[in-house]
Length: 307
Ligand code: 3PG
Image 1 (cartoon, helix red, strand yellow):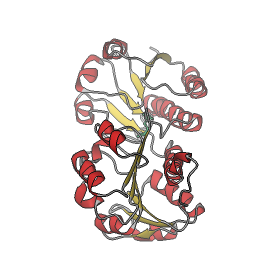
Image 2 (image 1 turned 120 degrees about the vertical axis):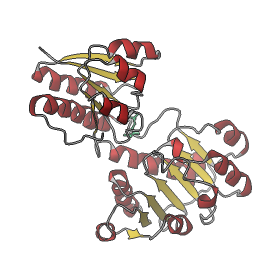
Image 3 (image 1 turned 90 degrees about the horizontal axis):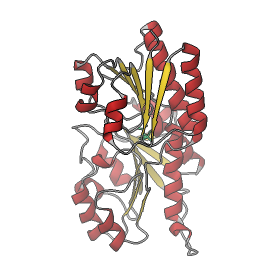
């Protein structure tokens, strides 16, 4: 019997990406249901009932969703972070969870510089700003996105540092990146810090007042990772204590109103998660997800399994 794939994207892929991933499933003779821009969780719960596979973005695959998905064998997060999937519950239900690492990394890295330069130029308000050339940037976690950030930073003439206990110092040095021995050293050294850590129980609220207050003058935190890694109480304390601190984030924090009402020029927040919102990233991640599903069913391939 033909497989049914549910593509559930509250934030839809670009039309070109949808077209290309549909081609993959057409060639495999799989049926596809597109559930785009849904606003009611009930729609997701209804659609997932007879799905054998699922492609999602930041859509939440909770215990409830998994409970409704009686046929589900695989869920692929078209993207890097899979904190939106209840991976343990999926494993318990014999559902394989996968991500598509690296597929949208360049898009995220480009947003880092888009936000940095816009802020360094005073949001293009006509007043003289600053340049990023010659400034120090610290990459907090040197994975796929971190590597693209490092390459672009070199292009802008920045000094590039990174902290990542899981990456060999020599690998960073080969990329022209200076490894530092501790997370504290990274924040002490760099005016700009770009966050690329995943959100998990260890990292939740780990970017706190103590760490951020180590940043040198003009300290600018760029968060294209996850909101949950920030300790917002500490963030607000730092905003209040230091009039030079800047926070640029892909998605607004819970304390958005407190920041925007008091600290003009010291923040930028995207209205929707924008890091992976390019046609290229959507095509890369969407098609990779589709191919991973076909390979899983046809060959038992579990290469990008995360649970
Ligand atoms: C990721 O983890 O890949 C990014 O956060 C992208 O998320 P999105 O697919 O919801 O844009």
